[in-house]
Length: 160
Image (cartoon, rainbow, N blue to C red; front, side):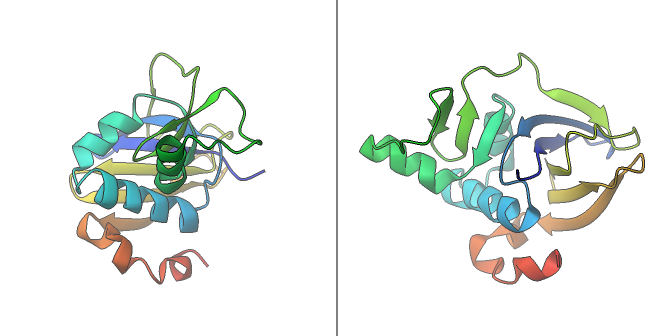
């Protein structure tokens, strides 16, 4: 099973975050690319608009193309459970989401259920890893312009 992640927003204080769980495809090489597509191809580079949409639901996966295809064609794969709902421009959310997003601080011990943390702020996207030694470790910072899908061709090398 792919690692679970959290996707959301880093507060201006640089340590407080608000995020929603994402159950699948949490590896950075995939998740950063999909968040990049969601931001630039579906939310016109507007980080605030994307973050507001992300924080409305718990997510099964971030995959804007697949969700859009399903919504446009009405074709649902036979393997997709009924409690998974496509959301244009982001991916698939869980029909039953927690009422409130998860809040926390980067200085607190991370929940071991989550391996990755993807946080947007005014500068771009921050990718953090739960090292299971009581802290989040910042791995990579992408500027909003650097998240342009055309600029991510060597993304896999960032995480090897």
